[in-house]
Image 1 (cartoon, rainbow, N blue to C red):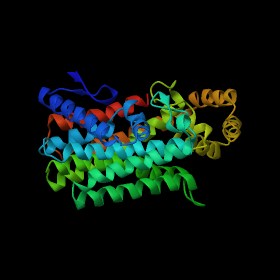
Image 2 (image 1 turned 135 degrees about the vertical axis):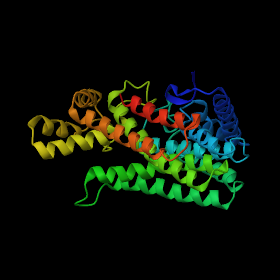
Image 3 (image 1 turned 180 degrees about the horizontal axis):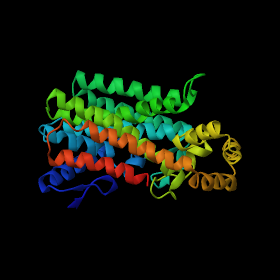
Length: 336
């Protein structure tokens, strides 16, 4: 059993392992090539997060889902580069919005070069992804455009918040389906589609990716509270400090409204205060780590991971399906 990809995913078949490793190595080369510019500074900024590493979760999904067709088809690796470039571009923009100081264990681009250059670098990555995408055909362009619209819509909905009368948890799950699930679903769709898999198989894998993407983001929500920083690659409590209502916070507020307990109200009040103060943020993190709301958010993660696993049921048993199933377990494991 060999460890490959993020979270220690184990691949039992040597041929599958070799395909995945070779594919990911080709994606890495493609990312470095796609982020080169005639202007040295642009190259430095564009490669900042590429060279910082990362889980390469989306390219891994492209490689695994390509196993349901011809994994050596010419569009597989370029499509993986496209989804990872798109993801990287959103990270540059997210860090500006969140005023994040750290990303993947290094200074964020905005902390290093300022907000304007970070935004423009993200735009540069979007442009390079579009150039590669154009060579993959109009259907690929349409799929990516629809996913990107969903991604941006999810980000806007998160920023705007739920309309009056809308359940905040339901609203947030819609946000996650857009801003995270859409691109992970496209990763699965591109991998299988570029490999020439049957349309019914492509549909199944796309549904799997959508649910796995939500579980993946919910796990990140838990990590923002529960981790010490090395697991998530960013400073714990970043979302808390920015007032982003992640699932643990939403579950806390839901419980406070339902039970009316003084301690829940006090914690909500703390979260509503200025968490720019490090001591206050540490107090909020400690309180949430001990609160039942964090465990409820973990259960939410498990629920979506199980839905992703169930979506794979129509597919024939094979090593690639086993690896995709194991990814569901790995995402849950991240959330503890």
